[in-house]
Image (cartoon, rainbow, N blue to C red):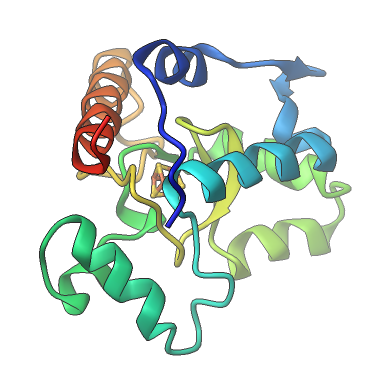
Length: 169
Ligand code: SF4
């Protein structure tokens, strides 16, 4: 597990940073931005596992250890049900456009269950997770109201601060 920790300012910056390319989040349009931001999530919040379709017992045990719970419960907490996971029609359109906009690009978005992580600003897959997981997602067209969105960001900030406490900052 990484020893790196986020301070409150860094967390706020992560939540506020929203560089745009052609009106879309930069990470959806520029693969180098996406890889950079994803690596940050891997380094500070243990984003993974790389291939969720295989066992990865060590990975899930580490996630369970963070919350002092079972592997089964850890496995139930994924990007797909994280409140920072944005899967609105607009966001899926942005991701597909960034992948080229052809029919196959939309298929990739659906097959990989892709969404956008609002905390770390990158495209993430529904079957993965990280230490900053927030109860209540995903954000969809149904629950995208401004209040709900702001609420989810506040929750995310609190959760990351709690993670830093767990890690001893
Ligand atoms: S914060 Fe949520 S959406 Fe972002 S990588 Fe972690 S679990 Fe996935």
